[in-house]
Amino acid sequence: MSGDKILNERKLSDKLGISRVPLREAICTLSTLGILEAHQGDGTYVSENNTGIFGNIIKKYGIFNRSMVDEVFEARCLFEADAAKLAAQNRTSQDLNRLKEALTQHENALPFYYGGEISAKHVMEHDSEIHLGIAASTHNNFILQIIEAIRHVTLEQGFFTEQFTLNKLHFKESMILHREIVNAIESQNAEKAYQKMQEHIIQIRSALDLERIRRCENENI
Image (cartoon, rainbow, N blue to C red; front, side, top):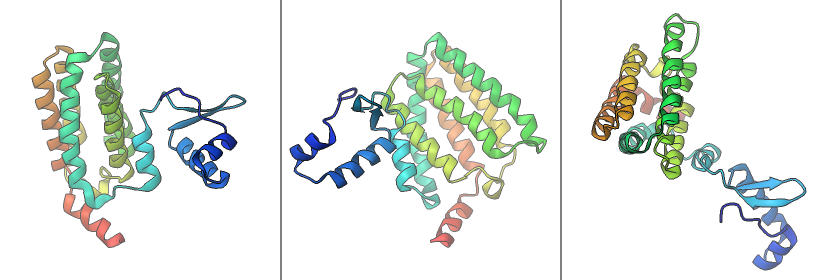
């Protein structure tokens, strides 16, 4: 269970009937993924703060690649639209404050991007703050983990670099839809939040050269 202390290495080795070398490696891997936490001088515990586990697993083992771009956007349509709907139902005033601050940061970054002063990756970091803020506003940690993992894939695979972008204005279009989604969440209009998030995911998908993304991955195999 979350927060529980596991047996020390010797006792756990005896209980499981395995040598201490593979056990130590397993504990090290689980700690890297954030599933276990070592407390110096006090032993190892099952993590209570586990919202990043899915993303850590994807990062460590490279589960997705660019050839799965269609699956990534299908997943985003499903999970992020439902997250926006649930956020509209569950959000607090603190959630709204964080979302509005993330919106402002994203909007302020755009002139610097279009002026060539910052990269698409920099803008995507602000974009992620909005999407993860919406996920956090659901107050459902499982949904937050899933969306963190999906966002990780999007950023790691570099979908939004100049190389793969057809519509150079998509960040400005995203800004408008972000604002509409947050407005729907603020007014607790769950259906509109759902609809606008789906519209947003379709909009950003259409901004990308998906065929080139797939071809690039296949060329690297």
